[in-house]
Image 1 (tube, each protein chain N blue to C red):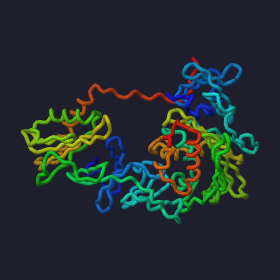
Image 2 (image 1 turned 90 degrees about the horizontal axis):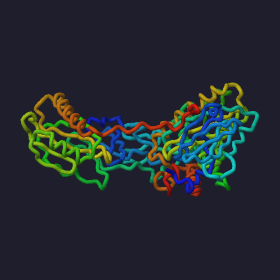
Image 3 (image 1 turned 180 degrees about the vertical axis):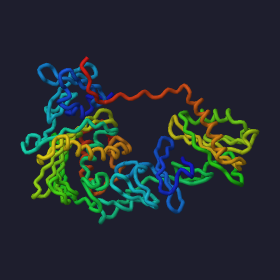
Image 4 (image 1 turned 90 degrees about the vertical axis):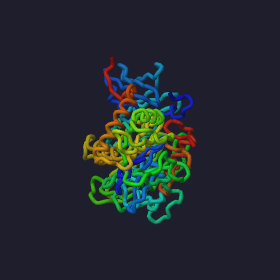
Length: 283
Length: 232
């Protein structure tokens, strides 16, 4: 059992279900930070949940997900600006069970170097494997690190184009187990993509990944968008489940970084500064 | 940690020793290597990667490591020097008696065995994993074999030829982790057809395993971590 009072991750919001899962007569049984949680919706439409000792959790509906907060801390789930932008349509993806820690999943999401090898033909293409330098922004109060001016060659990154293109990315880590990606292929395509990845930390080395995939391309339906995102995530999953140890090491001795890992290093420092204990090996 | 024939060139063999996972492989020159089974960059199992002749390529970022464990190629930075710390952890590894041997501490000679290696042909037995600690397995082996015991160490046991077992045999226990070990063995100067001999020992070791594991219950199935259910 996690000592929740001592675990900073317990003060944050984490997704535990899709909003549509909590329909009348149905409830969700799951695990959050090592504790059993049961969530349902009351007759007034408000989400409700009970924790292990019958304690009541705070819940919120946001971005099509139900978020839970175990220990009173921050006021609301993290911001995801694309959801309020009328130009975007959204596909909700998950739950995807992954046998690794939440921070391993987030770190993989922040990594461009694996695109040509794990997502060959989708997010990258050999021999264009080089990762150019990018800007890393230090965490600010209540918010983790970010990166901008990330650029990578992608084959057919835009659904409007069939040729490859240099794609510009920005990454943001608003919370320890939550990350946002925004990508904008060069001006003429004009298609914008944003992805919110929020990982439900169930057990230290078992997690449930949830994503909101948002795009300005209005052609495909939600099912098609979800299938595309699922294809990419299912390529990441076997990598994630083969990382040893499953917990993310925050010390600098266990794993050796290369220059394109600057965002990964900033993320590890952020978890260390936040004193996160769940799913990590502390420095 | 492996039979010599379990490690052909081109394959990455997943070994286990004292709770540690190993990537065991053979270079085109015939040399055997045993590394910690994780890429030094981001920890992905090297056995999930690719054997590229004299190099191992990680599945995640396609970093390549030479036979000494040094990273020699980082595709994300083809123009930059490779950090010298970017090395797979290599252990002392040797081949003898038809088996691959690893030492996790300082490189050292092969362990003292309770028998001299006799001249003549030998035959490595099929491995038999057992869910029991090494000392129990060794006791059970000592009680189950017909021949006179020639010698015994913490992890090995040698028998003289005897009626029904016309060959000397050396059993070696690989301590995989706390409660699991792998029985390996070598027959000296096998007189019988080797396929028959392998089958005979395999049957005996299987019987031994079944008796050692009798009463041990299978782990309970895991509960799902997420489910929608009807409100009772």
